[in-house]
Length: 189
Image (cartoon, rainbow, N blue to C red; front, side, top):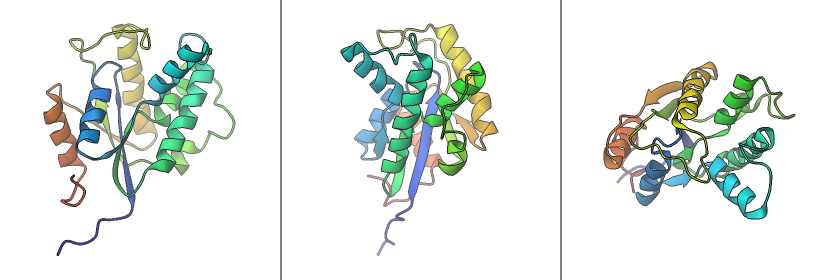
């Protein structure tokens, strides 16, 4: 008889370069039955564009980043027992605040200490062959690479270890991640 699954949430972040395949990877993990959380930024952009709002990265970056922190924190709290995978998290937004010298909103100074993810963070590297801008992603590849480099340095400063994902097929990326999350048979759907 197998032991009962651990009821402890094990939250993993998949972050990195815009347009590198994070959302596709998150969808593949969801398709395998894992609890996943989509990128807050994409949701916010869709909502703001639909309502004529201004909390957009190209209009009011501070408002956008503040909303993304709140949404990511809500996702962190909503994580159930076992493995969950988060497409970006509040650490990404804290990185933006740090890299731009913008003052962090009140009540967020300790968030990286009080709300921890698993130590391993999976970072999607720049992949020029995949990168595409669109209505929701208006920055170019050069800006995406700068963002990636900032994240690559910021996550370790918050106590996380970076594991860069290979530029390979989605199924191979899923296997790569699952092999490194020490998933047990009862975690695997």
